[in-house]
Length: 126
Image (cartoon, rainbow, N blue to C red; front, side, top):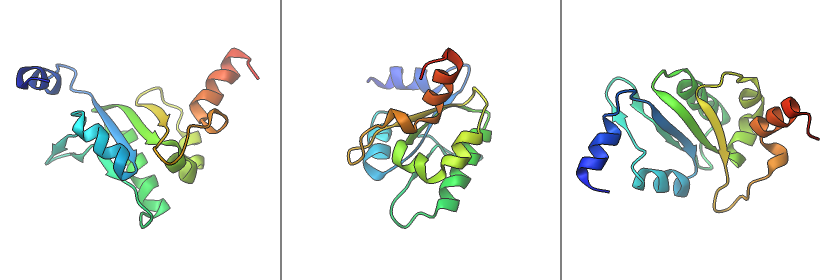
């Protein structure tokens, strides 16, 4: 990606971001893809979760990102979302969109994706 393309994406008129809560490999991959944002007022738009990260800290990051007006999409590793499943399931707003993604070590399980379960319920699928 050229510098001009990167600047155009970063300076979009709507100013919406993608936030990431994930393991080190996932967050690093998205940062290398240009998703990272560090801002003095809002902080960062990513959180690296490891074995030392408390469930409270994960829930706090989720709450922070879902309440920020500049975040349009929140990507979260599914195995991390499982740790705060009760919080994820309570979140009903369409924005930011919550997208549960697999990680290198943990494959995606559609039966645990709360957004997919909501869609299936609305469509009447089992």
